[in-house]
Length: 100
Image (tube, rainbow, N blue to C red; front, side, top):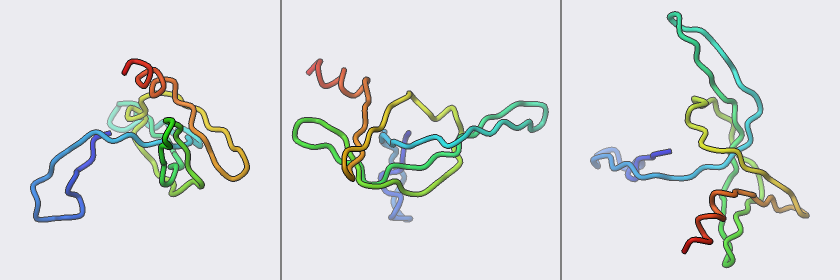
């Protein structure tokens, strides 16, 4: 998704940059509005995702829940937990690391 780099500074001109977010979809919601079908995803975000020195993405806990437009979901990833750390399995991210 694109986020405003200066969102915390209301007087700055918005500058949108791409940012990757990770989360766990709890469920999808379909609804009809003005004869058009729409789909929302209720997602729980991964909080404070970090990348270590070998490129593994991990986080310690999930954060807030939010409804988002399901079109904003780019791809399917996986999570697995070892002890208290959640690791992210993201094939597209690891494929990009192999190219460089």
